[in-house]
Amino acid sequence: MNMIQSSKTHFIKGLTAFSLLLCLTTAAQAVSFEEAFAASQRGDYETAYQGYKVLAEKGDAKSQFNLGVMLEYGLNANQDYAEAVKWYRLAAEQKYAQAQHALGMKYQKGSGVEQDFAQALKWERLAADQGFAPAQQSLGVLYVNGQGVAEDLNKAAEFFLLAAKQNYAEAQYNLGVMYYLGKGVPQSYEEAVKWYRLASLNSYTNAQYNLGAAYFNGHGVTQDIVRTHMWWTTAAGNGDKNAKDDRETLEAKMTPEQIKESMQMAKDCRAREFKGCN
Figure (tube, rainbow, N blue to C red):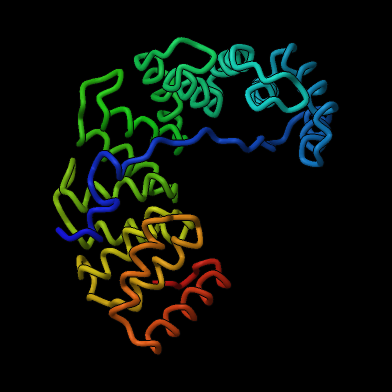
């Protein structure tokens, strides 16, 4: 296995934990909720905070969750993880999937609450059972790491697949890593490339790097250094230092015409938001 392969294709480094969903939900609610949400969208956090707080105190789960988000990130309030956990829990107890996942993440990180992987597993599972893709992804990571549960790579792959089928990029990437290495699933470069490609089209940087590496090594695809260069250029543009360094090494083996072709392909892909790029 050469140095280019080794940058991001080993198992532990390859799998990533999910970052907490930041978006505030917009499902139909009473006018005051809609007004609070609209205020948050235009940056009027004072109005949003007060609106959510009134509704949250009346037991509205979406407002409880959004209030938790504001408290976690210090939007018009002093950042207060413990208070955020309080509101996440109230919404989670009403079976609000986003809040269940948010609470699970707080238990994983030990943020605003004592770290407790068993509790993290509990809340992530409840959200995952509702089909919430970020929770399915997060549950997969817990099974990979054996946190709150015995390590089970087969189970991890099952949860990554559930989220990946919902077009969740991080799960698509993680599933690609598992197929590449044959961990929890039969080893298959072709399946790895399939999932790397889907994650890459969703602008997931690590997947773009690994897809470039697959083209470099001819793993699951025909070897093609022009496409390697294109995907590493894309990943480098998203801040991946390994992609930048490996691209520079690769350019010593390429003609000026090949480099020009690759740069144009990368430019065209970005312009099309990666639709139809391979």
